[in-house]
Image (cartoon, rainbow, N blue to C red; front, side):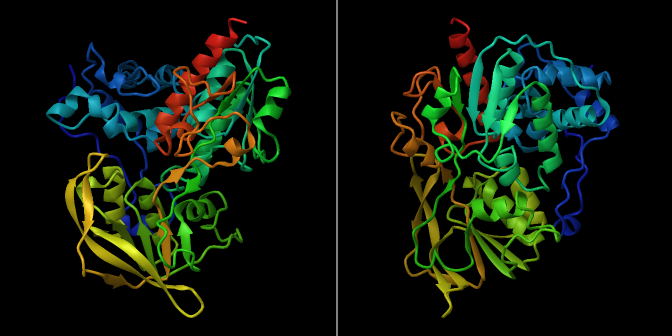
Length: 461
C-alpha cells in the first residue's frame, strides 16, 4: 500500500546564507533511504497520467516501482530507454508543469517527487553502476547533427542506438549547449553534463567542437560530405534588448554573455582570467529562469545588492517557483510592477543607475497574462553599477543566412513541416531553433521526434 504522507520527502539543501557565496550545487540530493520513502508515495496509477506529461515519454511508474524495491539500476535502465540525459532532467526540468503536474497525488496533497527520484537514480548509476551494454547494429547510414545542446544530443543518441553513424557539429569548444553555457554550476554541475555526453560517445556518437556552421561549413557543404540527413538543433542564442537609452553603456550585459562568461569560461574560479565586472549593485531585467540564474550568479560574485526588475506581478512571473524561492532565500531583492525606461551613466559612459517607471496590470494580452501599463509620473531611480538584460532569446540568423533555401519565420525561427523537415530535403530541425526559447525537456522531445522522423524516412531507402 502506498505511503499517504501528504508532503514530498524534503530535499536536503545548502543553507541560503552559505550557498549564496559559493557555486556548489544548492540541492544535495536524496539518500537511498529518502528515495525509497518518496517512491512509496506513488499510487502506481493504471492510467499513468504522469507519463502523458513527459515530453520524452519516460515510463515513470515503472522506474518508481523499482526504486521502491531498492532496484536503482533497474530503475535507471527504464529511464534511459527513452531519456538520454536523466541526470540533467532530474535537475532542471519544470516537473511541476509536466509529469508532476499530472500526478494524482497532487490533487489533494503534494505530487510525488518524480524529478528528485530521476536525479537520484541517474546519480546512483553514475557513481555505482556499470555501463549498460547496448547491442547496436550499424546500418551504414550517416546523419549529421548541428548543435550539441539538449535537442541535438537527444537526436544523436536516439539515432546512434538505431545504428546510424552520427556526427555532431558544435560551435563552442565544449558540448552541452545551454546546459554548459547557460545554466549555472549551482543548479547543474558541469561534470554531470560531461558524464552524460561521455555516455553518448560510448554509443558511437562523434562530436566535433569549434565548428560554427555557417562559417566553417554550410548546410549544403555538410550534405556534400555524404550525410544522408541533417538535424539542426542550434538553439536560440541571440539575446533580446529593450532599445532604451544607455543600453550600450559599459556595465550592461545580455544574460547570455554574463552567464557564458561565468559558466563556460569559468569567471567564478580564481584560476581563470575571464573578464567580468565584479560590482556592488546589479539590476537584472526580466522574470524568467534566466533572470533568476543571472541574479543568483551576481550575488555569488560578491554583489551586495541584486535587484530583479519585472514589469508584471509575481503571479505572472514565468520562472519556476522553486527558482524564485531560492532567489528570495539568497537575498535577491525583487522589484515587481516596474519597468526600465533608461540606464543612467557617468561621463565615462559607465552605468550609475537604472531609471524605472511603475506599472499596473490591465486586461490579459495574447499570452494570457494581464498586460502591464505605465503609471505616468511614477519614475524612480535604483542606484546600480551593472545591468543584466534577461529578456529572452531568438535563433541566431547566421545559419539560415548562409544556407540557401532554408525557410525561416518572421521571428527568425526555422520553418518545419509535420515531420520536422525543413524546406530543404532531408534537413530536419527542432528545439529552440524552431520554437524559440523554451525548456530543456521540450528541446529533448523535439530531438527525439526528429530522430524518429529521420529513421522512418531513411530506413525506407
